[in-house]
Length: 607
Image 1 (cartoon, rainbow, N blue to C red):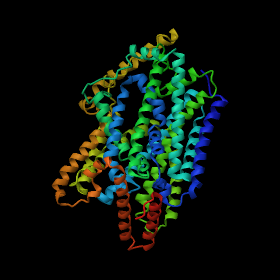
Image 2 (spheres, one colour):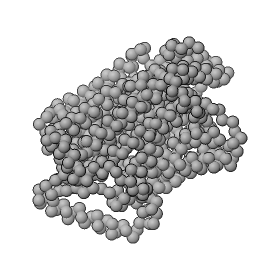
Image 3 (tube, rainbow, N blue to C red):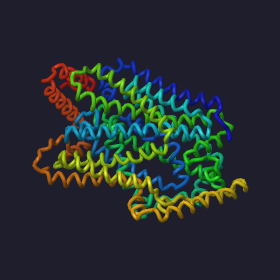
Image 4 (spheres, rainbow, N blue to C red):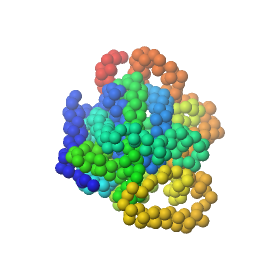
């Protein structure tokens, strides 16, 4: 196999340099970052297209670039059904959550929880988000670096530190605008990386017909599996129902995504950004699927994973790239740059979201007297701090990867109950603080129970249905060793484990991982509704601006009027609350009013 050449490093360095340059540009463009709003929300002046590309980029981490093709290689193209899931997710986010968040003009999604319920729930949401995101970011930086390092010999810590530092650099200098525009550039690199692999694989296999044919005969085109069993890892139903809940938790209420579409200059742009982003998600899914099928077509006779050429499935893509591009210097570098673009875009949006949540939920409520200039400096400081934390988490991941991975999958279960909490607030007018809290805790406990159980007793192969791989075309001596070595451990493991698996392990803990979120969400909503009704939820008077109303849906059909009305509502509502706050501290109120009046000018609306 080839190794990395100088040109590969040059391509990779160029990607990092361009990203850093965008950060420097936005640090000074348009007078720099004067207020925390400018820094965290891009001054609420973003347009739909860059935000859409940015949403697509941060959804696609290096885990997608390396993991999805390997997933399709191992389990087949049923993963494509996620195309339906993404459409449903975008629809829910744009029509249920976006109208309410945009109308309230909030910076942190968890602000909503205080406005609708109480400040303790806001604190719960914030703390859960901070823990979940730092864990996730550590793994997102480290896992791809490790896979690429083991196959290509690309320097592990050089890459981790370089990506971490560059990312922190442009997040701290340029704020949300830099994050969005670097994402736009990184999406380009990711698509280029994927396309180069697909085009070269088609050339090597002499036409796309051969790839599809091989995949068909190898059982990889298993699109339709309507088995209703919730224990099966991927079926049509688990992907469409479970996947929709899992991803809506990310697109609908997760700060890193919501922060960007709320930063759009009008609600129409915000909705458009979500719908355009859907096209991006589909394009990425098609690319990843084609890469996965090319992998199978090229290695159908000799699977590198069974032949011990690579030690984990996520190393298959880098292995393929070195194999098919061995005579093309710089091309493996492009692929590595595309994998790291995935990392950078995800990490930068996480850092920016963590800074926003910390400033809005933990700093601003307790230090009312801080000026906007000071808050923008604190936001920058927070970006710097969280950048450091993320690199530290990557170092931690290298010491105890399995533990961190388990912690992450457990915290991934936080998404379900949190989605349930927001849905309860937005859709149920009678839900109250007590109901919401009990619902959240119940949903959380049940999710953790299933999640930790599934970590201790992983589901059996008949639940996950891996497809057969062959090593017939490999060197004979290797394959004869292999058959003995792969056949025995499995049988021995299952014979030793069989008596120890409790009844729950094959019923409850084997639930498809996509249903964990669904379970958490539904339990939170149902328990929340019941407890709210029992504790006098019907007597309370909930302000309609915190709920999804009929007008929110109808306003889709009258664009210009709803948009202007929308802004007027946001601004007048802002000033009225600030006037109330200003009784303690007049300075605070004036500064806030200033921001609002700037905003009027930007939008060309003089109220």
